Image 1: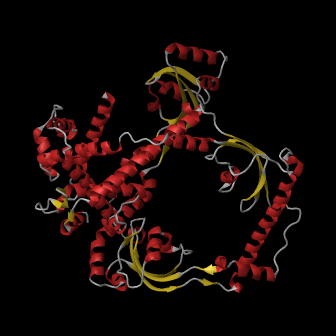
Image 2: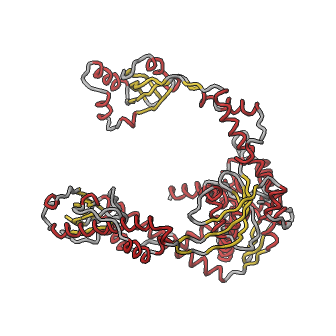
Image 3: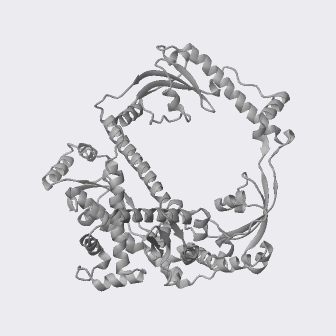
Length: 613
């Protein structure tokens, strides 16, 4: 029970910190009269709740894709609607909890407020003024904040009442664990074109014609889209950007550790629990009774575990002077470290390395220029969007801004120039004739807009244009066919007991394979095919450029007390229980949403969205 309460308290601290840390994003752009974006039953949806959830979802998506995401992009993929649906679902639970009379007392709310570090004064105690001003900055009153804590607690109680104690049938976990834990042992070999007794002759004109006729997809040109686009990248204006010399010098000074590196050593460190063990170890090395490698192995370690990499003298503390005075291969110590007495082996000397400011300046200046160019482009977005909204054509943009206009016959095969950018290819694949020319971002901080001028549908290329490619493709296909035929003949000669050497093949044995195993050098689906085999069976598998000949030697199931089986059973049981609980909760949530009136104010939602732009 105490452990459960501790977990709940820790969770509450996180919840309250999130409320404080995320509440007010964009709040400055809203009118103080807008407090809610709608109602769910008897519960209003506070503006700050929707703002917080929307900001959090956008930041999470940015972390997922690894690049900044504008609000326009977030809207394009439906993040705003996902967040709104989530907030409605949350407030539906709050409304249901209130109808059921679920709540927590003032003392519980008080405890959670007092736990928030941001509400503490210099003496570490609760500071009423810090509490009030922090909430005021985030657009909340004390009553609203404390109500949010109370509602979160009630919602947690309701969710717990629905899903706590849900367990999956034990038979499900047992069956799945046994299935995953089954093992197979095989012997296998490969047969390639080099193993063919007769080389495959080249194709005749009739062979090429037949192959061309039977495989039109291989010789069909993809859809081509004629696109006009206007774009601007940092590279285009980087040379025209002025970079302050002081900023270049400052950047060099900030990275001085990167450009001026003192003499270093490659060092290994073996730490002991006490001085006596360390003294005995260095004595044994001095007497040539053991080696550093043996001492590492005796501790159950590998050399990689004791490798410190390249370090300077200061990194080594008390051992620094001695280590830097030794020759490569020498062992010194023991010296006291933060982890205990240790022996040090110095393996190599790395000379001091210095890149002067004059040497680094071109690179630093280019970096700052690129950064400045990205800011210039970013600052130009609003003006360009205004021109587009006013009906400007792409050609007009090229005349009135720094955007450069060009055309491209784009297909999925084209990855040149602007088509090298994923963002352009995605836009080019979906743009339709007559679409409003939105402004898009490029991965390097550039921007572009585009217009579809026409589409050429996929078309079969004439044989005369692809004859060489067709001949090569026929040769590859026919050679693989010959390899598979040879492999089938070889497999037919193998029995459940005959060695692979009887068919002049070098075989490899793989023991204790499971369905989660991977055998290097095998094609996709290899393990699945192995688990479909019977003991003693020999099969051939088409690997695309070679054939695999496989014989199943043994198959087994794990013992009931196998540790791996037990661990898997627990994992599957917990996962299934969580899944069932989630399904039950979703059904419950959907049911109460059907019985709850929801009213959303579109103008208020739009106002929130405006604050993000």
